[in-house]
Amino acid sequence: MNDVMIEADGLSKRYDGVLALDKVSMQVRQGEVLGFLGPNGAGKSTTMKILTCFTSPTEGSAKVNGCDIVTDSLGVRSAIGYLPESTALYHDMLVLEYLEFVAEMRGIVGEDVRKRVKVVVEETGLGDVISKEVRTLSKGYKQRVGLAQALVHEPPILILDEPMSGLDPNQAVEIRDLIKDIGRQRTVILSTHNLAEVQVACNRVLIISKGRIVADDTPDGLRDRAGKSRCVVTVQKQGSEGFAKQCEAAFAGIAGVDRVRAIDSGSEAELSFEILPKGDDDLRPAAFKLAVDKSYTLVGLRREGQNLEQVFRELTTGEGATEGAAS
Image (cartoon, rainbow, N blue to C red; front, side, top):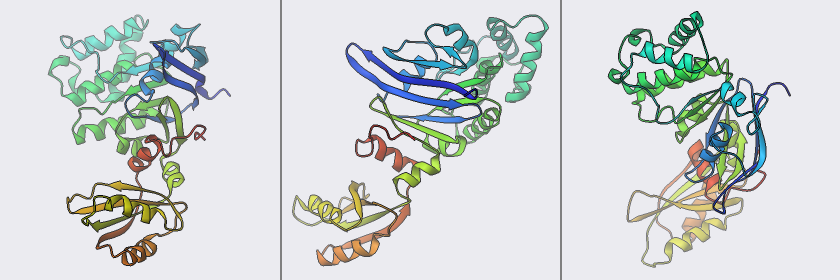
């Protein structure tokens, strides 16, 4: 379809015999802000490097804005605005000089240089610092300069790697809102470890684990797929060394339970367990009855909705990561 801006088909990558990427396929459409998530070593950076033509796949193919990443890498690079995690800025230049330099490097000539710089300065809110040296800017403004250089050639696609990294909360909100505004007119891939930012800034989330796509959904859809609620039960420790395993096995035997996982209780004298239902049943009554029957000293019992971080952990710890989970 003509609104597909990025299309990958069976991308695999091996480094010295190690399979870093395993048959990854995905599509990103025009106007989407895609949150691209994965734990360290999952294959996220490898995917980004392939799509931006920094490395080639061992197998598979991909097109970016209709350009093949192998046979037309220049076309791909022309269509992409890229902001790396460590923004490569020339600190001894004025902001205006730097943006004009980038525009010329991108092939913009004559009066169009000033016109394009003026547009991106307004778009990224750099008007007050245009005459300052880059070195004097705050981290937040440096990120704005980084966004401006990525936008100066009017790319239809933006790839942003950890754009909120190192920012204070106020700066992060400003950059996040800026990305949301930019995303209304362009396709954006936002690579980040900040799951809260994904929930706010992105309308779609793609999660990769062990080289494979394990989820492709909206933030709300991911929470729904993993179950809208969980039961958290806390009991006092007892003398037996195997008591924790006994508790975990007992709670796992409750009807309607999908899985049980030990979590941090915050106290050396207590044990906490997360109990996930197969559907959306309230497991508190059954957990309470079991605790009474087993003579567990119950300290806490609550039902709570899962956030994206909990879903992410489920999908990437092996229990929830299954081939073909992408939708």
